[in-house]
Image (cartoon, rainbow, N blue to C red):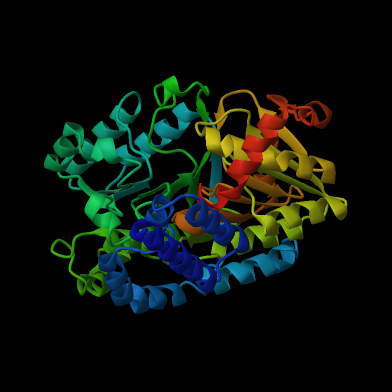
Length: 487
């Protein structure tokens, strides 16, 4: 009897807590289902994963660095102003909203190169490291040695031997095996600084939510060159080859110009927040900015191209709903054609409404998703939305050429979004992500052409055939959909 009463009080207490926190409807409903349906364990899962609790050390250091970061952001305003008269007017509200949310303006005069071949991606990064003279900063969710990545490691060792400052910031869970490996130890002995981002463990789980992850993919070389996009530091030839989904298909961009300062500044901030205070005391952030280390990596870069780009870092430690709001604005800005690629597609109600509203306005909406991905639950949750979207007129393409991991959006072949954000609740609310808003028609047309190549390797969903699937399949999809905001 006491056990039943304890369970009852836990369920009632946590249910009230969920309701009072007033989070998005889908998230609240999912947690209520877990708490009320699963005795004891549901409450434990909520305590571990239900609230976006960041580590106390990180929050304390964020408070210390906030004003410094804010002062740096204000210096960006007049670096490379954009001439909006030459750009689609639909971009102006998006830029204004992004600047309001994260404080980083769009910057003109950048050169941006799209790279779609994994060998070329890694070769370009290796070339940049090999030519470096001052700094190599790299931030990834997953780092896995082997294949071409070993050449990246060798290039970093050689750079460190030349006196180049090499810093690697790697997610604790995504790069767990590498962080504990002998190769990582050897790299540190060679002078490469490796920092674990958002450390996760049994003790940590008692004080912070361990599935809040650093999902950014950033490389900054000598304050002049940056790489970002969807590819982790892995070689697709050997990465998860036993998962049965084919090779991972990614895209990255190589960027030069004023926006590189924004990417470098965000890396420095992340490094400061994650680094042990004994190694990098709080007061040294301001000293670095004043005396050289950060200035040398975030100083103004000259105009080298024609592309206006806005860098948007997002995550629970910043404005929690920043990227979600910007995605909605992007979709509502479309007038003719909207093409999206994502490996994980679990839209919430506002995103669904925006996609259907786009079709109602006469926009040709295409979503390209891998036929199979590495998560069965996500596959079911995605399929639960296919019928609704297809009935509304959205074209869903199932990619057959591997696990399409590229995260891209093109709007009217005129401007685009590019980065690490998946179209799921985890990327919207839990992960630290990086996105480029690219106000450049030539680049967007190039990206659109790549999206068309994906479509050519895809099969459009046959909604009549799909609707004939069995009741058991529909039940599994709808059941997983109930907890999809937690995936």
